[in-house]
Length: 295
Ligand code: HEC
Image (cartoon, rainbow, N blue to C red):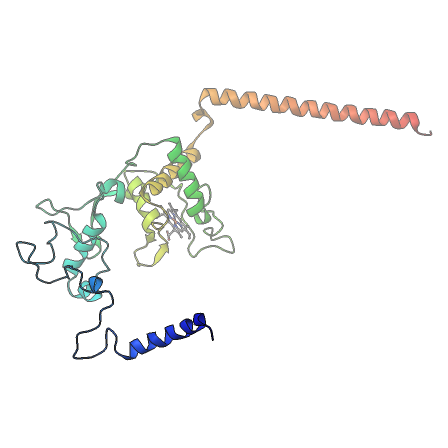
């Protein structure tokens, strides 16, 4: 055996012997062996211990007054059951942290107590005023986004036109969803003097779904897929669909009518031209046949 092989063979044997002789973690009266003492004994603050460094003698700092625990693990189930009046407002506060506008994020304003503070109950939020109109500036981009999101998340049940005749939602189809999806072009969803006609209500249903009085879920919510801006965009697109359904030819701007008429005239001219050419071709064919053919 040459020297190289002896070293290779000796290394594991030595390592095993070192372990048998006693390693960090073994029970012994003697001080433990430390292979990397500077890492074992590095100065550090352990949680909930004393520290000379700070004047108050604690190793941990207190949170800034008013701090709300955020993104910690979920509330203990026992706390939810035994102290709901404490737990639910806390959860609601957490979920509202950093959300500057209730109108924008919830589509509604919160109910308030006499002292002006926000009222919470065991469902978390209590809404007072549902907003009538989208709290965003409308733009062609927002409408395009709304059309795209509506077609992805709503049209399967409510139909591309919002009339409730989607592949899944139409109860007259063999695949119809239980109960059938609503025709969202009904006047009740258009009139903002009625709750169901308010933009904030449509926003809420898009994200939270719809439960009827029996608490049975009739429609799933799409909050996982539609953030606040997307949900407002969907509402905006829904308004476009309603407007289009209510529209008459008189609503079309004059320049668009002009453009459509020109287009139609061009199309008709092109068709006439094609027909004329086909006729000529047919004639030529006949003439050719007559020339070459035998009587
Ligand atoms: C899986 C099918 C399905 C999808 C997808 C769906 N809905 Fe619905 N939706 C329903 C059904 C079913 C109802 C009717 C519930 C009833 O009246 O019993 C309904 C009802 C509604 C209502 C009326 C609620 C009321 O109070 O009368 C609105 C508004 C609505 N949907 C909006 C939307 C929007 C916006 C989307 C897309 C983000 C969407 N829905 C996607 C099935 C669906």
